[in-house]
Amino acid sequence: MTYPPQHLAATSKFLSLVLRHQPQTIGLTLDASGWAAVDELIAQSALARRPLTRPLIEEVVRTNDKKRFALSDDESRIRANQGHSIDVDLGLGAMEPPARLYHGTALRFLDSILASGLDKRQRHHVHLSESTSTAMAVGARYGAPVLLEVNAGAMFRDGCTFFQAQNNVWLTDQVAPQYLSVVQPESAR
Ligand code: HQG
Image (cartoon, rainbow, N blue to C red; front, side, top):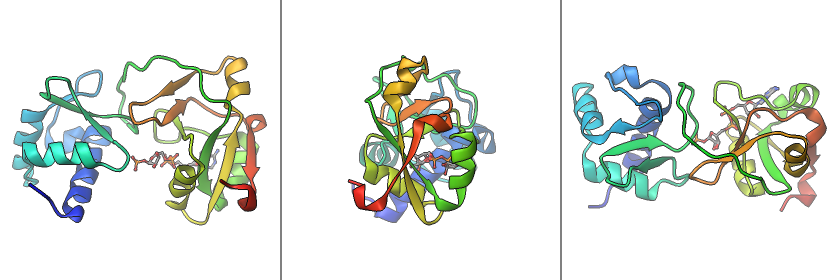
């Protein structure tokens, strides 16, 4: 079965809402690790007039551009790989990051970030990426983008903890200003 891209994107947005932020809006329960039973998700979504089917869910999980969701090994449960605002423990193990990571943000946030560092805001962690192009796309969501390089190697040596989500996004609690530098556009890769 193939689904129109808009339908997959709308379903991904809906799944992000209920699996990361507001499961209660459809009466869904997540466990402590963020998993929801797929059958319950389908039933509660139907009650909320947001019909989902298992093939549609599987297609969103498989094709999602940022691998936002994962199915459990037995495919009975689903969760968001990262990006939660509700309190879940993803059970990720701490890992040594690459020497350099990137964060894209909007130019209008830059002064505040260079003064006080990168904060997690509504999310559980600050999100960092290995790719400059991904970081730029993330930053462009909020306006004219600017690319920051994060000296993750120095942070790690200084005792900061990093996690890597299942979709390769790097997560950490905070990035202090001394580990940040602005990448000038001509040197962006
Ligand atoms: C900024 C999307 C002022 C920060 C993306 C960002 C990513 C500050 C915004 C994932 C600040 C928070 C995460 C400070 C941080 N002063 N602004 N001190 N510290 N900020 O959306 O990293 O589509 O919560 O730079 O692709 O943009 O949801 O974080 O601009 O992977 O799967 O505050 O979300 O993925 O915004 O994005 P967000 P983010 P999904």
